[in-house]
Every structure is written in structure tokens, then in C-alpha cells.
Amino acid sequence: MATVTVLPDGVSVRSRDGECILAALYRSGYGYRIGCRRGGCGVCKVDLVDGAVEYTVTVAEQVLSPGERAGGTCLTCRAVPRGDVVIRLRDERLRRLFPFLIAASGSGESPEGKN
Amino acid sequence: MGVMRLGYVHARVTDLAASRAHYGDTLGMRLVHEQDGTLYYKAWDEWDHHSVVLEEGGVGLVKLGYKVERSEDLDAIEQRAQRFGAITERMSKGDNVSVGDGVRIVLPSDHVVELYHDIELLGTDTGTLNPDPFPRHLVGVGVPRIDHALITTEDPALLERFFGDVLGFRASERVVTDLDGGDVLGSWMFCTNTPHDIAFIKGPNGKLHHFAYALTDWSEIKRAGILFAMDDVSVDVGPTQHGITRGETIYFFDPSGNRNEVFSGGYMTYPDFPSITWTADQLAKGIFYIGRELNDRFTSVLT
Image (cartoon, rainbow over all chains, first blue to last red):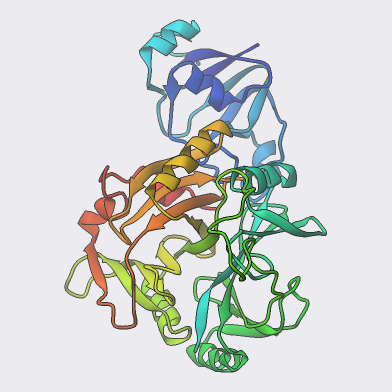
């Protein structure tokens, strides 16, 4: 279990062991603009602000270049948190897709946002 | 004479094991050859050696192969391509496993197309003597054949002219910004009697939108969708129906994020088929007739 905090909304969800960030968000009732969910398109890219992630499957360098990766770009459909992480969406806000899932997952929302 | 059909799609994948599960177990193609990190697949109702080639490393399209009726067609196409100003080169027997000599063309859209006449004949899984309607031991969806590919190009009008002038394709349907001299946003073109053997929409050069498998009917589309759920295939859209081509469809993604489609239905085309025009304001209905809404993935998710 790890805590995934999403900026700028200041929402925190819990990810399960081995679960990618995107899956943890959707399981917890949140979403944002994503693409193929299989690491091919790069639409789900965010900035990793704090913490570390690992990629348990191969990610194409043409989708996520070593330079991008080193600079903190993170492909949420493939990135599995290694401990607590903080990510920042690029020019968009998290969508509350399913309030009942948000409630059931025990996700936290900081009303004033974080950082 | 000329181009007969889409013969093969050669794509890049990030993971061969996951690709085997998808193309072999879920879609039910047969692995016919494997060499140097590349998988060669054939669908059951196809007779040529392979129709899908998956190369490890990256994502997206390496090239499309179109089969011509006679070897002399290669010379004529090469000449027309050069006159058009495209970069061409001869390919030799063995450049592609089981494929003979041919002509390789870099399209105005930077995609690579290979024209060939000779390829090893393996035969369909039901054969040609008193055949059963389908093979007994199909796996998963059991796709019978590939059907078409949709690619993106910065200049759809130019690519449409190339496929028409050089390869002898005809437009079944076109999307234009407006009816009086508007820009072409997309074109669906055929060389067989199907609605499309290639299609392109405006977007970055060199990218793959999807490649498609033909299924027999709507109930097969629904059955494929159920198998996608069973196998946790990432589904993009569908089952639904296109306005353009009238085809029934599910868009989905392979384990590397390349978009695939299962497609059924559609009308017959002939050389005198009157091209259909869609205006851009009706594009959403043209693409997804029932929902009439383009999701944001349709134009942004490319490999």
C-alpha cells in the first residue's frame, strides 16, 4: 500500500501493491484524460513531484524517453509507486467520476489543496 | 490488375509475451514463424504466409504490405510512384520472411508501404477441398482475416491523390471541412469490394491509428467484446456502428497500446462507386453513428 497524492487537487488515494497509479485513481472513483492504458500513447503523462515509481513492464522509449523519465515525467498507466508519491496533472484537474467509490475507498481530499 | 488487398501489417510491440497472449490467445491468430524477436501471425481464412508481423521494440507501425495481382504491376507502380515524387526502392526476396521481390515506397505521409506479388502459400485452415465453414479448434475471437488500416497524415488530400494515382485506389468516403472547396480531413479508400482497404485522417505523419480484423457479423463483434472483457483487453469504443463505411466495430488496444479494431458489415464497392461526402460538423456521427460523439482518444491516441 502506498499513498498517491494528486496535485493540484490535493486528493490522496491508496494504491495496492503492484497496482499502477492510474488503476488506483480509477478504482478510487477519480479520473482524468487518458488514452490507451497500455503505455503506447503517452496521453496519461503527469509530473512526478515526489517519491519514486517503477515500471514492471517494458515502456517504449519513443513514448517515455530516458530524458523525460529522468526529468520526472511519469506514465501513470504503467507506473507503480515505490512508496508514497506525489504527482501533478498537466493543465487539468482531477475529475470526481464516482462519488460512491471515492467514499468507499477512503480517499482523502484536502479542501485547500496541497503545496 | 494492380493492388489486390492489404496483405500484411508490420507493427512494433514492447513485449512479445504479452503480444502472444493478445494476438494468439485472445484474437486467435496462428503463430506461423518466429525469428529474431519478431512474430509472424496468420488468421485462419487467409492463405498467404502471414498477415501480422510483430517486432519487439517500441510501438507503432513499421510498414504495410499490399499484394499486387501480377509481378508486372510492381514496375508500373514503381514508375508512377517515382513520377509522383515518392521515394522508392526495390526489395529483394527474403527481405521479408517468405515474401518475394517487391517495391518499397515511402508515402508522402512518411509511412512505408511495400508492394509485392510473391509470398509463400500456406493455405487456409479449412483448405480448398470440400471445406468446412470454419476450423474446428479456433482460439478466442478466431479472427478470419485482416481488413484495413487507418493511418494519420498532415495532408490527407495529398495522400488521397497518391493512393489514387499511384496505387489505383478509389475513395468510398471523404470528410471535408466544407462542401465548396474545403480541406480534406480524411479519406476512406478501397482497392477491393469492401468500403476501405486503407483510410487516413488528418494528424501527424507516420502514425498508426489502428489496423482492423474482419468479422462476419454483429454478433461476432459482441462475442469479441466479451472475450476482451475476459482477457482484460483495454477497450476504446464499442460495440457500436460507424456512419462512415456502416461497419460495426469495437476499437481496442493491444498490450503495447497499438489500436486494433474488429469490424463487420459495410457495403460493397465497385470502381463506379459514387464517393460519399461527410462534412466536418457531422464527423462524430460519421465515426460513431450511434453515440454521435468522438471521445478525446480518437484523434489523440496514436502509436
